[in-house]
Image (cartoon, rainbow, N blue to C red):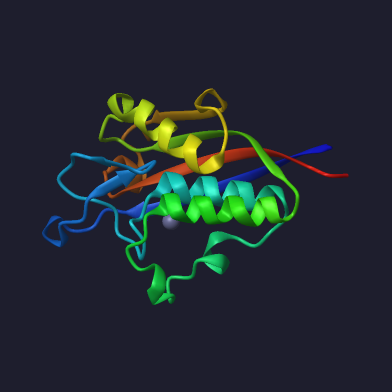
Length: 163
Ligand SMILES: [Zn+2]
């Protein structure tokens, strides 16, 4: 078996509060005045992770596999996008080993929700929660993220695959 690494990055802007979108991160709905805008539930953490695992096996990105022109996935839970990405990776004989991810946001605080996020992701990735790192940092009030206009996420994934 060989070890492969993939990287993922995603960013979504906040919807206007009147759109009444829930804020969903790692499959957890977090109390906040607004949520992120997007075709799915706009779970930026899940999208970065899905891109990382697809990238590890050299596959196309989630924009290719789950295009925002596909009405069948409008409002879909992004945990389902991660689950389907894992299926693609497994179809190539690969297995997810671990994930590490960082959320970049001034708010909200995600500490109280970390355990639930890790449990959600462990279930769809098929790995132990201790193999899932989720961290959060602010953007030090700099730029669009610093003005609380959206949330970004970075992720790396390691997978094993046959030689
Ligand atoms: Zn996204």
